[in-house]
Amino acid sequence: MQNLQLISGHSVIELDTVDSTNNYAANLAKSGQIGNGTVILSAHQSHGRGQRGHIWQSDAGTNLLMSYVLTRPIFTHETQFYLNKAVALGVRDMVEKASAKCCKIKWPNDIFCDGLKLGGILIENSWRAQTLSSCIIGIGLNVNQTEFDTLRATSLAEILGKEQDVKSCLRSILESLDVRLEQVARKQWRQIADAFGECLYLKDQITD
Image (cartoon, rainbow, N blue to C red; front, side, top):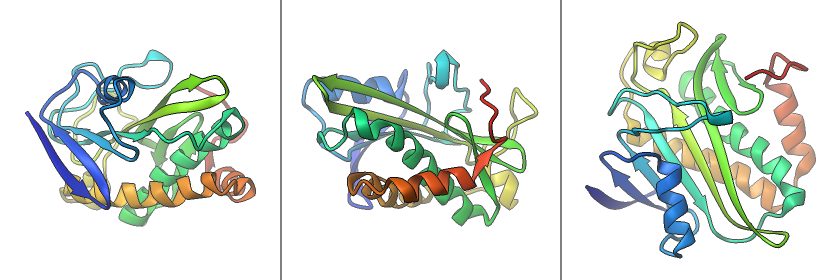
């Protein structure tokens, strides 16, 4: 089932289930059927992906599983490095605001709180010549899940001691992302780099 709604100025396509929100968004982008800033939101993913082909596991209906689509060619190879950092910062900003906890970004794009993984990001791009034709920003954030296959994971519900509204989390994360993406559009590299450096988890260590 597909439901279209407007949240924080973004068109949101809401699905009950999908193989991957990134796959769904990429197919729409290729055929020109999706606008800039559109969000794909799903209650469940059967084949959600993380960095380096890792599987993103999530209980159905408990977490924020989304893809944010950029179709305007405002980014180039020059800005790609900062785009990745800006997106991670946007997610981290939202989590800190919601949880009042100090959150860190673990390289390359995982969000950690109190040493436990709270979320992850997967950015997939399509290029035409030297210009980015579309950018699919996949985000998985543990919102209400309380049981995990790994002991090194947590959720907003566990941190705050009560269930959270997933739609409210979506609204907040879109607002934070838009602020950080505006920094990329304005080429505010120093602000992005400084903020990223301040919240990097296990600095100088690159891990899977």
